[in-house]
Image (cartoon, rainbow, N blue to C red; front, side, top):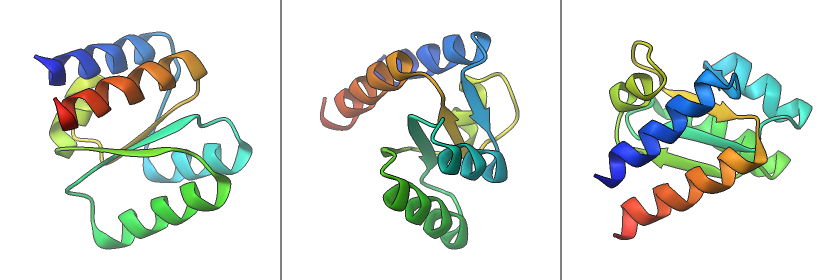
Amino acid sequence: MKQSRWMSLLGLANRARKVISGEELVIKEVRNGKAKIVILSQDASDNTRKKISDKCRYYKVPLVSVDNRYSLGQAIGKEARVVVALADNGFAKKLSELLDESQWG
């Protein structure tokens, strides 16, 4: 149930055009300061994981992970996605809370 809550929220953010999808676009938005949170799938390649986590650490952008690329893609109505970012503080805060709940709940 909780997994579907974060997926629903991500879908809503996508419809509001607050989701950035794709490795290069996410990195660009992190550099520009527009990305408020980055979501990375746990099945991302080591190279992608390192590149994204280093950028997020350097620019102080929160990084959270989800189970796999298919659930991340499904949440925004697309094929499998390895990394997405949110460009809205409200969505980012709520998504962070929901993902924390799903990890510990």
